[in-house]
Length: 74
Image (cartoon, rainbow, N blue to C red; front, side):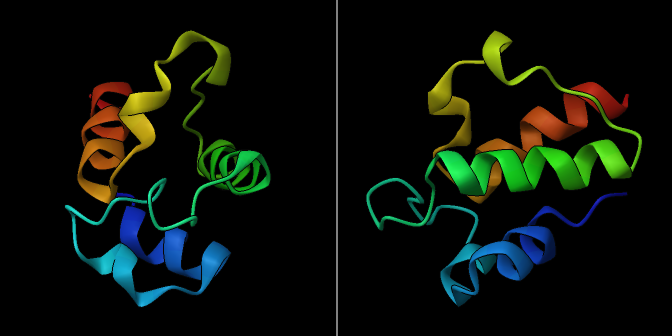
């Protein structure tokens, strides 16, 4: 299982990512570069999610990102 929280922490360095309800957009953690970095790590792990096919709101919190990743790993 992919550890979304650790990946996010490695990319952005903000411990808030360990709270699944932490608002990444409101706290200026998630930007276009962070999104690309995150999806690149997922690709390296064999999980391919087309960024253009998902609603940006699915990337708002670590919890919602976990749900998204789980959908693509089932």
